[in-house]
Length: 356
Ligand SMILES: *[C@@H]1O[C@H](CO)[C@@H](O)[C@H](O)[C@H]1NC(C)=O
Image (cartoon, rainbow, N blue to C red):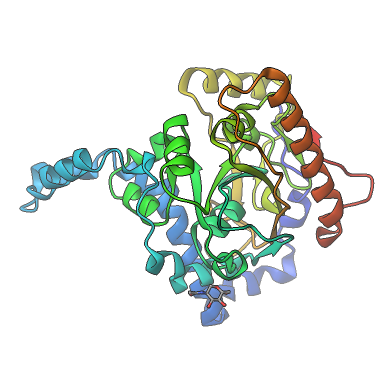
């Protein structure tokens, strides 16, 4: 099997005269940039390292330390609090507004563009694309105030929706819940859109883990053609549909080439069928500089654009035709949004969204 990295690999070769400054660079980085990198490391720790530690640290605490009683205590809390992610969670504004997220978002940097008001007396499903590796644009826009969601959409309570498995990891689930993350399921959506009051906006990364396998720099391939569940529930629960596109999300990491039909992709698809998801073979930068391989995303800007809401009339039993019609309308709105704002990331005029 031939594995080849994407185009940027030419740039990542180390030029000789830069060698010295590369080795020294960690010593002369300004504090502001260090704090930004630290915030991103914290995020990667939370989302990648902590779940792995969760497999053994509780056992270590239970059997090897005098803090063992914390484990059964936490287990009771976990059991008691199990339903919270499907009951609109527990948003804590202090956590969402914390300066940590400012440093985090300035690393890339991130920005959020509003194109229309969202009236707080309606509910919304925000479809957000592309998934990228970690959906950083969508996450920061809807789970923190780092890019100013609160001021841009007064009265709107936003939630990012994610796989229920994300809420099984001790400690990490608490962070997810305090930032307003909710489970991506019918029950959870129904609760947030029909029982939790008006002004809720639930953001769904429609393409999910499948789309992550297409997260290559400068590519805009979306898994959307056959994903219609979000349209069905928008009709059922009477929520307006809002398209959102995160320009630059796919540029944060490189990934081994895996076009559909290649051997790597076939193996990845098989793993996905068995385990429900397949982590992409990603390649980012190291903590100290961008020439060494690591788990950190590249410092590349992301521009999240939230489009105009598509008015949806509540329908108890939507027909296939109604769902298809809304889906077509949504895809068209998303396509237009991409066309209207792609110049912000210097995307060539002949590059368009691909729906597959
Ligand atoms: C939210 O973010 C915006 C933009 O950064 C900022 O102006 C505003 O003060 C923040 N709001 C709160 C309540 O922290």
